[in-house]
Length: 204
Image (cartoon, rainbow, N blue to C red):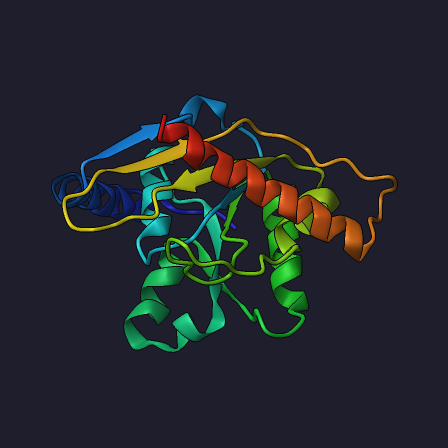
């Protein structure tokens, strides 16, 4: 699970194209990059727009994109089928247990990489709610890595400013090494609260 030099060059070109375009379309402010660990971690953000992964890429400003999960149906589209793997994304079946995606995720984390997941599983517009999946917390616990909560502005009207904020990395605590489903759900709820709390702070 390594990127090559060619990928680095192409990614950086695309990175700067997106950075310039998005700065014009959405004046943005990226904060909290210094809070993201250099080693393996789970990057968990709210999800309200198709460009959310790009905002995370801009926040990280890395040589390569972080690994990420993408909804299986996205990989059925001809263009995305080629683009998403290039950007470090791999498919996950959100409607059924997906052991292959779990194994790949754990392998990525254990090899020292970052993994980006949107726990809500689908784009959630402002004022709407969803039931976040507990997979992110489960993976972080099994791999022994911290979670970094990230908030991305909900309102994406053209030329409106966007803020992307990374919070402090933390490690959920459980009574045992194998938390129950109820414990994972509670920890997921607390994680989403941390994410949206970052959004509340940006309004002050």
